[in-house]
Length: 337
Image 1 (cartoon, rainbow, N blue to C red):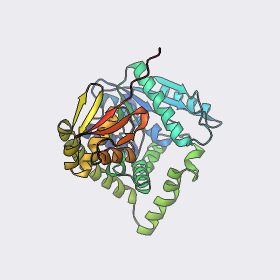
Image 2: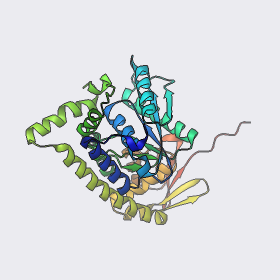
Image 3: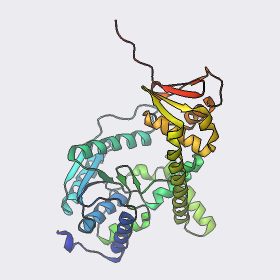
Image 4: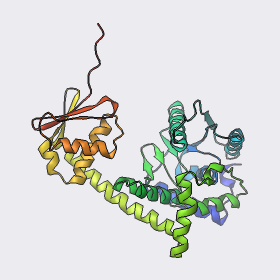
């Protein structure tokens, strides 16, 4: 069915307007770009695929559909077939990858699945020359993410939730509720696939979705999801400002000496703690380390420690207080004799 003839009932038109507003406000898609929609077959990602298919001319994008089979349950092949048929229905290329590994005993299944899915998505994007992927995260997902970050003791960046645009990942549905994505699907006669894991309260996110948020809304008598999403947007604005200030301070604090990174201890400690922590975090990120709070705090402690103090960091990095500086280095591999 050509895009011009695709139906737009009121529930569909409402979501299309939200996606259009988000795409324009956050510059989610470059004109002429190839966008890969990640589609599981559930109501949110199915809504995403059909919405972008209806908006591709307006947004001036080319669209492809990607599905990842985690092989975690019986019926996953049927999900793939369903998504393939949906891609055919809106006349976009279909791309698929299947998990080649499985979570090990003791691993978080959620974390494993997320990592495997994103690695496969990145691989597909590189293969077809796409610079942007569209994900089906909704306002409900955003509210859950913020509450989980609070429970886990996350800082400002964590409780700010997901960005509408983060690197190559675009989230056009962050202002769209799950109720609206399901209404979108009903209006088009779509029957999304259902993953039983999304209803299992053994998973913390599901417990928040099915227990905590409904309890809050029942006690307060109103929809708290939109309030949480609005708070996250305000926090992201503040976090972006702090990040900009930290980046401006970076050249005065951090420099390179050969393969090592050195931080001027005095200048680092003169910064407000929120900025100093961001500078330390940036150093670790630039050295391909996923910084945790303890790593950042360790670098800041070295800046006020006596010379000779040391710190071991992930990925083989080592930090040492030397005179006025904190030196971050990666030991050279031993040369075989």
